[in-house]
Image 1 (cartoon, rainbow, N blue to C red):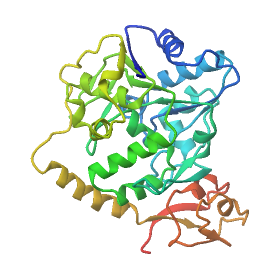
Image 2: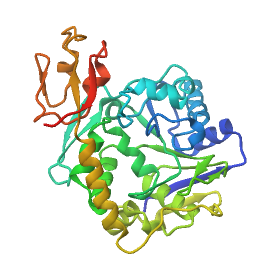
Image 3: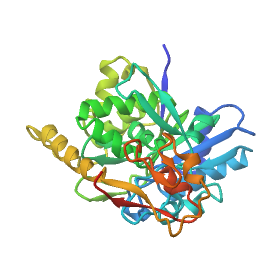
Image 4: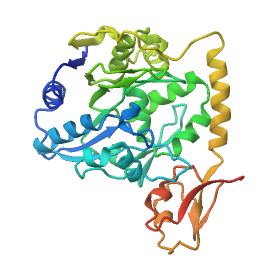
Length: 351
């Protein structure tokens, strides 16, 4: 029986904690390993908002890996916003550019199509850097989520999908159970080898801030999410991805090997539950994502130099001769990320 290690680190400096985590969970040698560090870069946010990974954790992780001789890339795929910020601009606002010490890369430029006929989600696109790395290190944020109650390791892995494609997947699977199954499918396509949850400074569903000063690390996303739910004071099986993983025998808490003490965060509040909550949330999500899907890439021909970068990078080949076939467009916005002249912007458009 394979045991999944979960480490709870607290009252230590970050450098010592990171070194201890890699000593327990990492490979014996990191030298010349191609390592992708994926923080939680949901959107443009100030680190004090406690909705993205703390830059201090990112810096300590990158620093340890570089000192170990690894080849490090840092990147994530944020949701596109109305300001048309690209990944590098979002990273700058989150404090990740400096924390990555020059290793932050725009991983939304190139993606690879993965076909899984037996899955709910038959086709998906994943950033090539995720598929090509030797070691994937995930740095989720400990936080709540209206749809899935909490968003930690499994939900953070949704970020391997190019930014705009997430909206499309949400629209295809508005039901919480279906969406949660899709999250598990994406996670299993290329799971991270090491997960380090940022539970340093966090915020609950009511906006109250806490400073537990903890890291929760592990080699299995289900085990990590199960542990974080316990710390939040909720039954882990209220988290749909944990419940489904248990029911489908992907995960069992009996296989967790703890290193450290699991302690509740007193007073931490999760999204309010009530009869028909899921139905109401699903209806709202369906409406919300259908509106967002009206946002499409639009080419400003006055700025376009006809370099064909957008054509070459488009996964479904929806761009030809500076024209976009919106019937084929999957709204991944890879074209937006790669355009060297900022000639592509996201606008609302009736198709």
